[in-house]
Length: 286
Image 1 (spheres, rainbow, N blue to C red):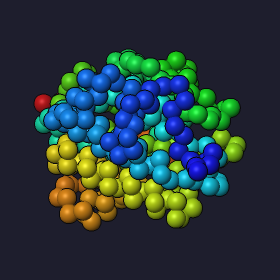
Image 2: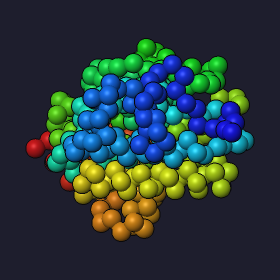
Image 3: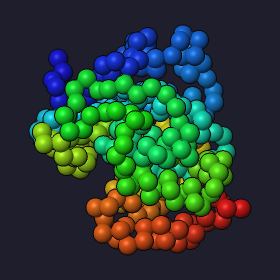
């Protein structure tokens, strides 16, 4: 039996029919739409199937102290996440930007990587219903697309590409954005805990699942470059893909977190220079 530290299941969202591994469907879709997802051959359907399989594996894990609360937006925010993937995950993308895991006021609220609410509702034009995890920290309630608190990292990330690209098409015809790990962890006080802060055995089991899913995702997308957003995501991607024998270029950019002093001194200029050197700026502005 799983404890309250385990990955929380969707309380009032849409886990109902079948899961490719566990016999239940976390998509909340009508039968026809679910069948199209499970059997579809598009890049988006392959991507979503990889995430459903990851969800199933993550449900078998449990997390002890210092973790007290675990949220999985790929369950309770599946509706908005699926909207994001089906709208923007497409053939021909060559670059995957890879974050580590959700922030409490970004993807945890919206189901979109670096999902600051204004960017998600405005530039990305994502719609859908967001449920809630079964157990929430009183200071970290999920209110979905109605969240009024801005996540600085997400605002910087999507704001940068909005300014650079103008239209979403100019970004997503070449790039997609994904997180290595979909889970957000919190302590008893509500402090956000990153995967490296977990006990070693729990961290290793978690990241092993996420590494395997990353290899599936990179293969499904067919990208030629993975750009880790932050050193941790870059290092993890390089290791996982190399060990799997997947030939793809792995690079990195500075994380936009306000906890990073350098990011507060002109993150956009630093990242533009790096992406220019990688040939990504010319790709996005041609």
